[in-house]
Length: 329
Ligand code: SF4
Image 1: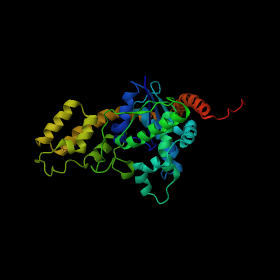
Image 2: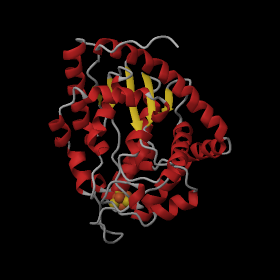
Image 3: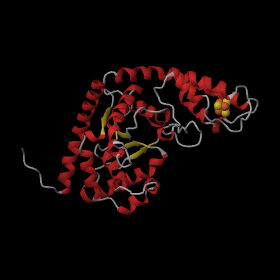
Image 4: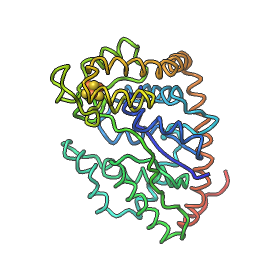
């Protein structure tokens, strides 16, 4: 089975954008591949963050991942900082990473522009991403459009390291292009993001889901109930595709184009389908929140399995790079 690696930042509870854009796909992938999924807390500190909440947000993300269906029997879920080999390999890879490539990364340029003082970690972020994947010799990485450039750099780092220290040692990771849905925020404009306050949390109550969905942006051409709409340009339709059965999606599209339904009718159908899909996940999340020790134990076991793979790679990497072996304790 091909090995897959993917990571998610510890932003606390998942929202429907994270779910439809990535994590729903992970739940499928765990049955098809040898998967490692990491809560990448070391990446989170490259942006301004609150040290007082990092641990609880990390734990909340773990609860979310288990609640949506990541199964420790089928995949490895772990916290990135619990496996020190990530930072270890990160440093070794800096020796083969061209500075110019880092400076050319679009995400770096965008994020650096918004900060008065730019931490070096923001520039080096793609090297740590490369270390995350290469440490496990993963050959497939599920990527969104915004990560394609980082994946290309990861492949370049693997090529350069291999050229210097061992042809073919690291596989050049390939993008795993599976169908995911890019959902906009409830404003219908910006990316769905907690910091923009335009999200629906995955485990919100049925009442809260409806309260947020009711005023959400739709096709702006539907100014009155009688105006026909274009489902393809409506964010609500995209969310329907993620939560409603295919025949309902067809019905939505027809009733939108013919003005058979108003947008509120359409959203009510969506709310019912979302609530039905999310209810068992919310129950699992509530149960896990009552048992943080169970969640920590699962993460500890996940980190142990990841560490065993990582240590093997690091021993081989150090050897190939010519470091003197440490004596036995
Ligand atoms: Fe969007 Fe549904 Fe309204 Fe059509 S009917 S514009 S799909 S909310």
